Structure formats: structure tokens, C-alpha cells
Length: 179
Image (cartoon, rainbow, N blue to C red; front, side):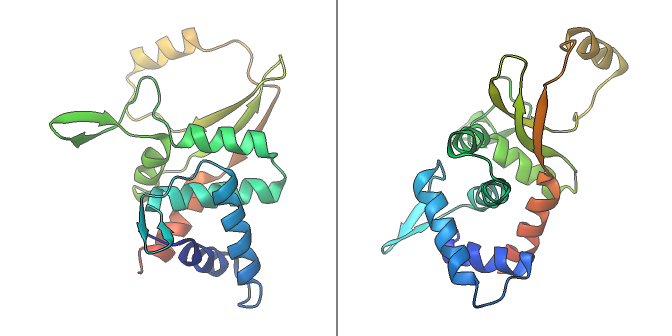
């Protein structure tokens, strides 16, 4: 579990931000955590504690906000990351049942395995902005690949914003796993 101040120090180290500029980054992360869906996992005194997955989601949010993604789209992206897909492909065990991983849990798992992938937002032909994860397929047979090609939509999105999530998450893990 990590405090926002620890996340700020880690992000500053990754971005090579000076010690003088770290308090501004800390304030920016606090603003993000107050305005968006970044649920704390626990409390220690008056401080919220965040899971490694939520810290990684915060890093993605920080980079998207720095790019200029608006508040509504950023919140949609964070809610998407903290939800499980309708048909999850990866699971964890919990009280005798298999629970589908949220997209951010899956992203951290894939990043730890060294996979490259992206998350972001797409804009369709009707002007809808939708969050998306571009995970590589786990294992696809030739038959499964041909079925996916047959059901794939003919046209892609009009525009896409992609975060190099695999690389960004691996950088966070490298710094925070030292602790």
C-alpha cells in the first residue's frame, strides 16, 4: 500500500523532476485523486493508502491529464480501468470462486510479464468517446483468429488517444517495487 506522497516521489524520480518541483506534482496527484475514481484500499491515520494497481492507474491519469484529456473523458477512462470486462479472460481466486480481474489488475499483471500494450480513448463516427484497452491476445488459435477477423467492425475509430501503458506501468513498478 502506498500514500500519494510516495507516488509523487516515485513519479518525480521517473520523470526526473527536481525536489523543488515535487510538491507541485504531489498537489496535482491529490487533485486527481479527489476528482476522479481512484479508490483508496485502506487508511492509516488520516492518510489514504492505495494499491499498486491504483497507483499505476494514477500514473496513467497523470500522463493523460498532462496531455490535455478533459475531466469527463479522464474519469471514464479511470472507471473503465477499475472495472472488469463483461467477458474477463484473467481471474484471481477469492473465497472459493474465480473473480475476473479489473483491467488495471490485468494491466499490472501483463506489465510484470513484460508485455507491451496500450490503454486510452477512441472517438467513433458518432462522436462518442469510449475507453479502450489494447491488450495482446493471450493465446489465439488460427480458428479463433479467423473468427475475430469475421466479427471485427469494418471501420475503426475516427481518432484514438493511446498511452503506452505497459512501459509506463513497468516504470512505476520498477521504482515502487524497490520499497
